[in-house]
Image 1: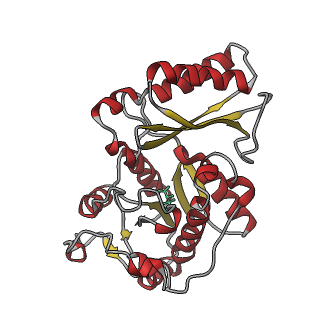
Image 2: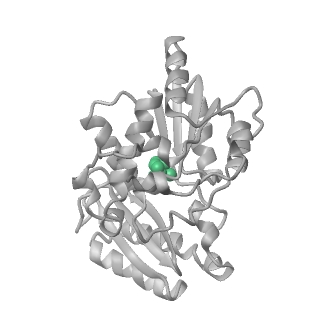
Image 3: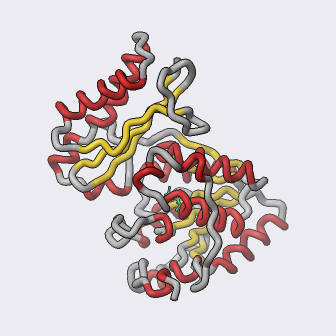
Length: 305
Ligand code: PAF
């Protein structure tokens, strides 16, 4: 029995009856999505895709706005993909608000929102997975072993259904984008995969759907993560090149500014290959994941040398 078939519905009751303005379609069937996009392509229209897990925030909006500029037709997918969550992760409590997401997508010019049920995306005997293990070993892949396999598989499915000219992703999930780009290159996919800069709250905290889990005290202190990244950037600008020293600097800052937080990783890696970097001789990504209470927040900064 496929686990996805037995999951309770993830969409709010009555969502299928959401009254759509004539200008935006809501589709839940993969075949209907494929048919619509095929008709657009046959008519010579370009298509831009923004894959999301919903609970849209301003970060998503920056992706949607960019995609709007880049395609004649704009598709936004909203799907909390169960296969990228480990058994003890937050699939069940991942925030969802489809009616609000639909209103936002429409206000930002989406032509179509694709919001399938898990059972429509994964057949009961689904057995095919796409992986890029070399790039998925470290960083988020180390503590979330099946995460990127689920991401690659669902994104490839979406790219196959939509056949977009361009698909837009956020650089907060830098490793995700590097992995998807490698997948696209290795499998000769057509779509151009674009990355958009991290969108931040006014106090510097990277926007994330998971920020709503933070308690008011945690939320007030969470910008310390970004401050730590900037501290490291300043040290690099001042000439420090040793990753271990820079990592210790980040740890010391967090211990003082965000006591009780637990660093899952704070890693210096090559921005494309995700290979660890011990000494910075070229542009290097500093990527971190930090547990603030039970909430795991990620952030990163590209350090130019
Ligand atoms: O970045 C996300 O929100 C998800 O990983 C994605 C790309 C929509 C795949 O489920």
